[in-house]
Image (tube, rainbow, N blue to C red; front, top):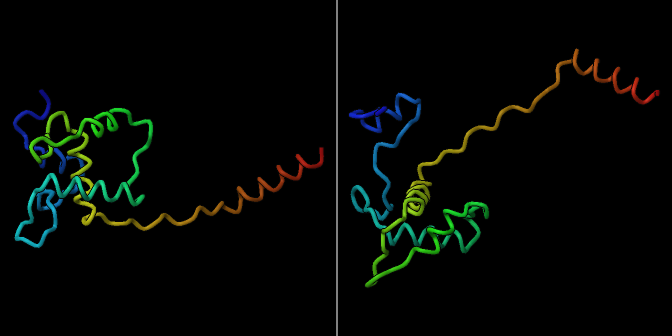
Length: 126
């Protein structure tokens, strides 16, 4: 069994991934925050309703879990909810996301540009 006995954090680090120091939680101002399924789900739902969160329509498993999500005795039932939990954590941790610098625009080398110009001219003459 690959990775047995090695923590996920060590495996992720070995794979070149960076992790946050804190676990995913709602930023409610309390020290360390709190893990709230309800608050995370409501944040996700609000983003969906305002068009700030979209799910591709071919992700049938995600929509199946979303349809099965329900409350019992006022609490969200956390059963068969792996995709919903992962989505909730991702939305919760958006505050840690960083935008990367876009790559510089591609500039065709002069030699290639001259070759392309010659080829285009020869095509237009025929």
